[in-house]
Structure formats: structure tokens, C-alpha cells
Length: 266
Image 1 (cartoon, rainbow, N blue to C red):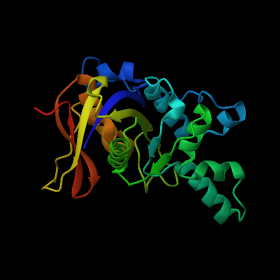
Image 2 (tube, helix red, strand yellow):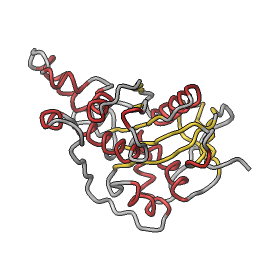
Image 3 (cartoon, rainbow, N blue to C red):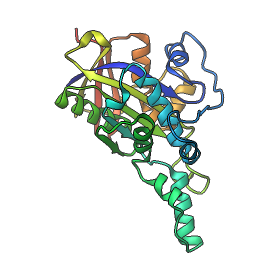
């Protein structure tokens, strides 16, 4: 199954956007873990911007960067992938119900649902196209990429894939430990327009897969890849930034990774 990657968005510590991240990913510039910047989501009313959580702000910023290549982002279907959603809001809901015996506030409940990020994106862009929100544990990025590629291939139209995960609050952190927040977005198009970007060929690989995941050369970026499910995208983003042709392996299920060939097959 083949699609074309047209543009990329990224927001992570030291990787504030694709233009600045590309030379870092390729090794042309050193990685410096500067503080994460999460700008207010554009297109939202002031009260909605205040309600938007860190996960939503990061996801919408990455989506905005990638969708800039599309003349009408309001016409883009989307897939949003997150392994755990916003765990801070989940903790606040559980605290209100269990410790205080009260009903969670409407704002907390509204933002806690797994499709909150896609909902805010729809509001910000005026988009009424279909959107899928998906979770698959540590394989969430690969699951989102596979779902997005299936939709692009089936419907023969461009689509926006967004992946985002943020660290848990202290009480949940020992149970779900993420090193940092990370968000990325990919604008995918059908393979019938190969000159519009980087071809990606996807296949599920059921062979012996132990230890075959593609890793990052830079230790700090490898720690980021291992420390955040959405950051499992980093090897793919690195290959795209370098203009490198070849196959890489992304974790999906324990015995079923996702193989991705970047560039045209030889």
C-alpha cells in the first residue's frame, strides 16, 4: 500500500517546527533540548483557547504546520493518534469522583474524551470532514499511519495524520512514564500524484521481528523515541528529512511491526 507524504509538522523539546527540526534529525545541526513551546491554537475563540489542554495545543500546532501545504485544510479528513490521551484530565476526573465525590466539571469532561483534539481542530479550521481518533498503546503512531494510509488509498483523497502524547501527572507517571511531550503531523496524499512529495510504501511484517525497530543515532533523540509513543515517528521523519531511500520498521503490535519503505522502490 503506497501513499505520498506531502508535508510534516512537529512540536517537541528542541524541535519546534519542521524547518528547524530537519537539520537536527539529519545530524547537520546538534540537538539542544530547549524548552517546549506550545502556542495558543489559532482559529479558536478566546474561551476555547483557554480550555485547550497541552495535548490539544501541541496537536493543533503540529497539524497547522503540516496543513499549510493544503490550500483548504477545512476539506481534509483526519486521523488523530494518541496512546493515552490527556492523562492530566483523566486524573482530575478520577480525583473528583473518588476523592471528592463530586461530578467532574463540564470543561474537564469535554476535554477528557479521546477525540477532543480532533474536535478542537474541526472548530479551529471549520472542518466538517470525517475524523478518526485512535489508540493502540505504544504502537499508536504506526496504527494511526496504517489507518490513515488505508483511508487515503480507499478514498483517493488527501488526509491529515496527527500523533500526540504528553506526560502523565505525578500520581500516574510511575504507571505510564513518558520522558516529554511530543506531537507530529503528516499530510498524506494518494500515490497517483508521486511528484507531490515522498512516497511511502507500508506493509505489515510478520517475520521474526525481535529487535528490528529502527532506532535513532543521536542518544537524546533515541531516548525521546523510546520515551513517548508518538515519538516512534522519529525514524520515519529522519528518513524523510534526509531524503533517504530505504526501509524502516516501526513498532505496532509485539509480533507485528509496520514496515515502511521511504522513496520509490528500486
